[in-house]
Amino acid sequence: MASVQPGCTSDPKALSDVDERLSRLVRVPMDFDASNLPDQEKEMLRLLVEAGKQIHEAYLMQYYPPGVRLRDSLRTLRDEESTKLFRLVVRNGGPFDKMDHSVPFVGSTPRPEGGGYYPEDLTPTEFEGYVRDHPAKKNSLMSPYTVVRRSGAADLVAVPFHEEYHNWMKPASELLMKASSLTENPSLRKYLVSRAEALLTDDYYQSDIDWIDLQGNDVDITIGPYEVYDDGLMAIKASYEVTVGVKDKEASDRLTIYTQHLEQLEQNLPHDAVYKRSTKGLVSPMVVVRDIYRGGDIATGYQPVAANLPNDPRVHTTKGTKKTFWKNMMDARVGEVILPIGRELMASDQVPYITPQGIFNFVLLHELSHALGPRYVHGSKDTVTVNQALKDLYPALEEGKADVAGLHSLVYFMKEGVISKEMEREHYVSYLASLFRTIRFGTGEAHGQAAICQINYLWEKGGIHLDPSSKKWSVRFEQIGPAIAELAREWLTIQATGDYARAEKFFGEWGRTPKEVQEALDRLHHLPVDVEPVYSIRWN
Image (tube, rainbow, N blue to C red; front, side):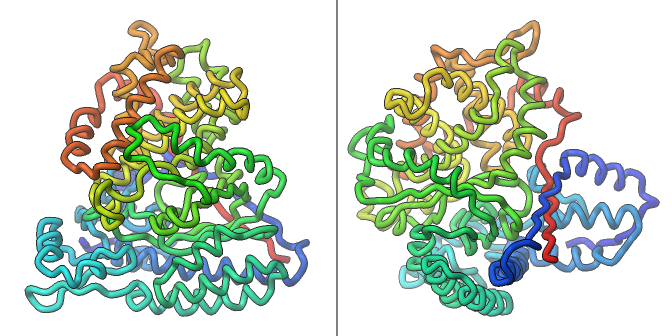
């Protein structure tokens, strides 16, 4: 990485660039008062947050190790530019703007595609060739929980996460074990113990099961390596993340009805029946929580409001998944970002259809649909996972699939009376406004790439419309359902067949940004792109 000269406020161009990047964020306080909690619960929360901080530091080493040195060099400086740069580095986990195609805002050196997971000079072609020529090493090199290193000039070796990041996994594990002794909830105690052990072995299967089985817990925690978005080389290496939250039991209970339809939703998907799997016997609990701390992948760049985890196909096919909704982050996104975008871009008669409930339900259906669809490539006898087959294109395709499969499932839920038919327009218009929010992260980011493909596809198929005179967008309610089903079928089929060439062709055709869409984005320049949560906890 190029040398960093913090404190160079004499460079007005550099400071202007930093200011412009910060202007895309709206700071939202996320304050939590823990002072009135019972001492035992308070201490447990404190230990979980401390464990989260260890996980966060390990993640930074995964993403871009030199970024840690840059952050630390800026931490104690107080001049204007250094203070602002520090805020940007913390937000992005390094010197690359995750909301702007990961371009560097310090120096000019681009981030290696594989971050800290691989040697910087390793190419996908070399990696795939080595794995092909050394089948005995395939499982370890392709594991989500190993980093790849060179051994001499010709060999590649896989180093387990728990060894590579031992300096952080060991204290994180110890903190989880201490926290387990402070909860009266047996399922939470069991999970904290099994997850503490998993951090030191990288065998997460049992603790994933224990996490899904949590019941009656007031405190909810997600901690471990999950998403593969930061692996731009092969999209197989998982990033550490952690959130600590307080559960909203009433709101969580209201979502139970959705999980009762998992098998029907799977069979209702619009691709060929031969590719469908059975979800009978699987579970899909949903929890609504208030986020009080987040670290790792989930705390940098794009700020998720919900998640469907774990991502292990073995867990998906034997147990199920769990969906988490962070209500405070959702409220901030809706009020500060999506509603202002809708008022700017959508036809005036459709703006009233952009509602918090419509947006929440769209996110709910999105996360529910992450649990649907293929996990292994058809005909591979459960040996080749979809993400292994689709490599770098998998993250965007999976995010897009969840969007359109979710809205396809809306029709099913309305027929079953789970969602009121009167809310149909709220879902579709809230969805379209949300797509414009997402593409502002850049079409090189997985969610943004999926979103621009949806806008282009639905526009071409007549599901959405741009008025040439007013430059306002709208949903065509009669056409959008069939267009969404058609797109869902395409993406699900690509996943089922693991057809990389077909996926590449699709993104090449539909992943462009037309001038009309760019003009719409330009009209949003004065609005924030995303929420910047500012967490604080009052302990006493």
